[in-house]
Image (cartoon, rainbow, N blue to C red; front, side):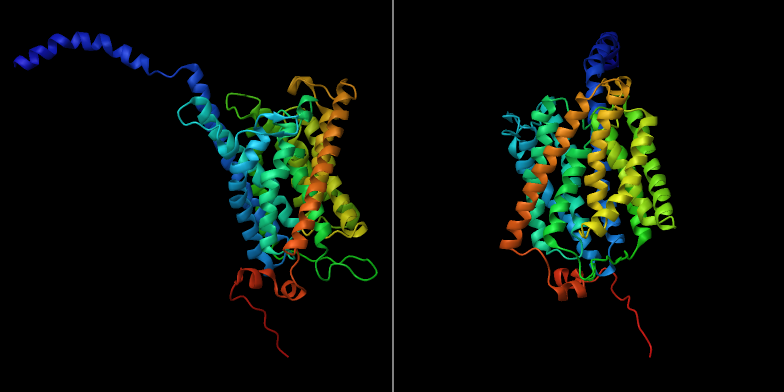
Length: 445
């Protein structure tokens, strides 16, 4: 009873103190913004990570069944090896303190991450988001070099593109480098990510040479159909889904309401690209080809990635449609005129359409969306020339360095599997297994 009376006496004092205790821990507007931005950026990173599955499905579906395990392993190792290489070296080169505007020189091994401070914790979030981008650039090359590349040689390439080739371009444009100081706009990476992958793929495909049976002695090209178009279609839908994280996530701020505009421009460009590719190939070859229509959607997505935050929805449709038509002609030109064997059209989708999308910013940018006007909206030619400078300089660096890298790998380790391994399929000799074990085709006399 005495204890109860004491509690009653101090109860009013406790009630007076309670609000102060609660208010002391109440979130502020600033802390809420940090939490929202962190969650949004990580969610976007997870969406972009899921794109690895999309790339794996597209590449596997567009190639033959006997190489399916090999395609899966390359996509798995692109992310696994790339994550370690980017953590150790790539992130520092990309976002470290700038040396002459060419590369970063600090922040290696994620040394900027500090779990005891808010800024240090943000570095972990930002690293995660940038890592999935680096892995995307690396995995683009897999499709162009499919069905005839030594697995160990491909692993060596994965290390160098995520540790050096890609981060240097990223520093130039996103890390405070010389193209950034010129005002180049590549919001989510038509050039930084996709053209880097596309131009590296071009260098690899040239040095590697075509698959057996791809070209005849008279120079004519033979189609080598993929084994699972439904799988490729699933991959494209996964990529389309993940691209909302890729583009809208590049704000790295959930409090930035422009993510709504970015989502709209991204979706419209993809839709226009798919339709334009279908119409183009229908007119050109007489049939609405599904594989080209799928690549058209990807072409539209790649093209809008640079300007998704800087152009109107109507402009996004034009950019995506041109990308969708462009990819049809580019695939045909690279295959039949240049005789470069690219099984999935990676060079056309990512390299060519990435360059187009970057240049399109200089034409279609509107100040109402990103604060800058392109040529078609009264902004003059200055931005377009800056974009062109970026496209050409990135091509020179990536193609040159990747060509040298693949040349060294070819001399030291060998780049191409034997003819017998190609005929049997890389799954058997490179990995000791089959993707579809037990499925056999029997013929009767």
